[in-house]
Structures are given as structure tokens and as C-alpha cells.
Length: 313
Image (cartoon, rainbow, N blue to C red; front, top):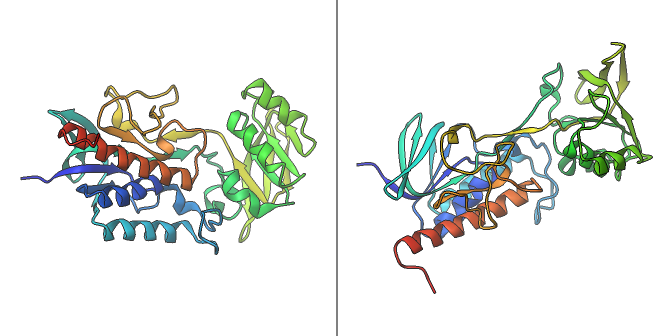
């Protein structure tokens, strides 16, 4: 007979690991399902210095390992496997994984989102060594340095504006002849004296040694190429929420595929919660993902109590 869990968490990033701790502490029979190593996007962080209470920078792997060990100490189980589908039957969730079916009374989707990559030579090799997808996370490491921002949407404009507060040597490139960002955001960038905007320009290769040193740029109209020195490359060309396994369900997603939740991390399907980068949220950081996970665990416990008629009133 299979185990019936109270709280099944899909994804072992910051949101999932935080939820695992809070779920177990709430005396929920908790399991975390992860297809790779715990940590999620945090594994790409070489030096994390903005997590409250951690004075000395820590790398993402070490932080994730601490969070995993803490969750296990409180009683959470961990299950290796990839999830192919989720469905709700007779008041419980059936999670189909590569290792079999997992049953649970509640479920948390914490699968995160993957950054879209340029897929050019040097990009992957220099992730954490000057290539970044998060200005708030890594921008402070390059104060006063020459930075390249790639992208033309809302996120790219917002992040370029943030970086301009750290350096007056920001170059922003976009492959088209105008931004696709909201007009106000684009205008803010265009009038910022610390940002040099170049339209019709793409990055072809990122070069360096132990870190980023230069980027090969190409004009899309003339095809002229030029190699320029940069200390860092920030790429903001969108992200892909990991919600493919939810296709065919009634769970509400926004136009870009993120799960829509309320402030209690509740989705449109009762008993199913979402936390971290996979849900609609205005700010994606490790600390906000961890907070989402804690809230989701608390609300999952409340949901189970309500179903059992044991809700505290």
C-alpha cells in the first residue's frame, strides 16, 4: 500500500525547501520530489551576500544543502524523480513521477522558472563569473564597472535602471529597433545618462579567462562585428516557468505560463499551492521564494484541518 502524504512538494529550490521545513514542523507528513540536486536557481550563485542573517557570503549550493538538512531534521522525506502529471481524484492528488505514483492530500508546485539563454559561445561557461540573469543578486559585485545588459522588455529596462545606480558605464543592447517594454520604462532608460542604448545589436560571443573580459557584438543591419571590454553581462530575455506537467489541468496560469495565486499561495484548484519563481510575483529572490514556501505550508495545514473539520475558529 502506498504512503498517503499530507503535503507533497514538487521542486527543491528555496521555496520547496522552506515549505518542507515548515510543513514538517506543522506535523504534516511531508515529501519533496526533485529530479535534480536540491537548490534550484540558487545553485548558480557563487557568492550570496544579501540573505538576512548571513554575514559572510555563501554559495548557493551550501545554502541549499543547509536548507535540505534542516528540512530532513524536522522529518521531511525526499524523493528523486521527474513529474509528468498531476491530477486530483476523490479529494487527494495523484502525482505521476518517473519513480511511481505519489499520493498526497495537498500539493505545492515549487518548480521555479528557467532563464532563457542567448545560447551563444561563452554564455554557459561564464555563468557566475560575470554572466548573470539577476541584477539585484549580482549587480553589487560590479559597482563602477562596465556592464552589458541584453534585452528589450520590461525586466531588461528595470534591471538596467537598477544597474545604473551602481555604475555609469552601462551599455544596453536590443536586437530590434525599439524596446518592447512599456513606453514609460523604455523612456526612462533612454533618458538615463548612465545607460548607452544600442538598438539592432546582438551579442555573438562572450569571452574571458577566469571571468568575463569582453563580448563580441554584431549590428543586425550592417552585420559589422566589434569586440568590446565588459566586466559583466546581464541577460534579460525572459524566463520559462516549469509548468509543462500541468498542461490539461484546470489550474489557472497567466499569459506567460506562471501559476496565478492569491496571497496565501492558493491556486485556482483547492489544495494545490504554488510558491517561488513558478508563480506570478513582482519580485523573484531567494528570500521571497523562502517566504512563499513558509506561507504555502501554513495554508496547506489549514486546508487539511478544514477538510477534516478541525479548523481552529
